[in-house]
Image (cartoon, rainbow, N blue to C red; front, side, top):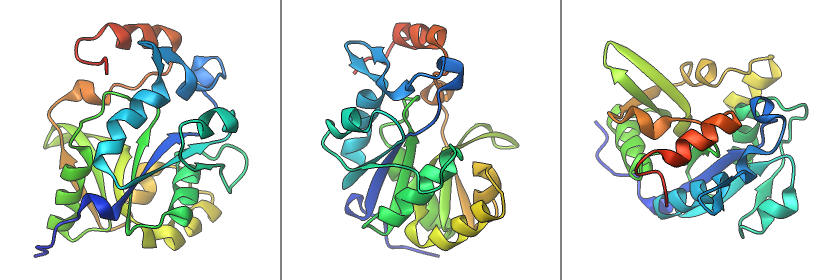
Length: 207
């Protein structure tokens, strides 16, 4: 049984903002306004206290994202290959032993996300830990909220080259752990302008 903990200083956070925003009208979701801020800014605000450093995965509006003051990474794999493409680039640029990923469209994620994923990963002596909600016998996976060892880069590269693109599909092939969260609303993601308005009206979601 592993006993050593994973400290904040060992974790780099990656904000996934490189998607096409199809259901949002093909606009950049991370830069959509909410509560006088933007989705990406709210995500960054919640992520920063949990990690040692931050990276941003983006494929559009690079100069705007650069104004947040953190490195902005374009997908090395072209063609909007999904979140795994951003994770692959992030793993390649990460300078710490662990990479924590969060999407830019779920800014209410738990403030102890990194801590609980790290605990689950070390307890199971796994290579990747992902968030789940729901009943233990019927969990709902939230695989873009994950903590992974950076030495998984070759494995992810091989999966992408084979044509794989499902986040959970790759992660569940690795030695993995599940971190259970009870608050389902913390993982509400925003895909449409209507959902953006709804999220802004929910209690406890403002910064």
